[in-house]
Image (tube, rainbow, N blue to C red; front, top):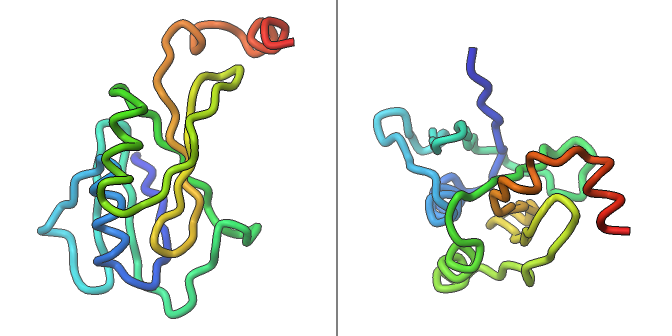
Length: 130
C-alpha cells in the first residue's frame, strides 16, 4: 500500500509549478485540470481542485514536510529564483530546515537529510541542544 497525501488547492497549475520547483515530478498521464499527480523518491502528492482551499493555519489542513538529500541552500535558492519566499535556514536538534508558503498559503517545511542526527535518539539530541 502507498500513501498519497492530497492537498486541496485553488489552482492546480500554480500548485503543480510550485511542487515541481520544490523537486517533485509531475506524472502528466495522471494529470487533468482538476487533479495532478506528483512523485518524488520518498513518496507522492496528489493535488485536487477545491473552490475554497483551507490554509496551513486551519487545524484540518495537512502539513507537508519534505527532506532533501541535496543542498538546503540550493533548494531555497531554486525556490527564490522561481519567485517564492523561503524563510531563513534554521538549525534545530533534528537538523536544518526552512519553511515556504505554496501558492495557496500552505506552509511547507523542507528539512536537510542529516544522517548523523537521524541516527541519534531524541533524548540524546535534546540533551546535546540544552
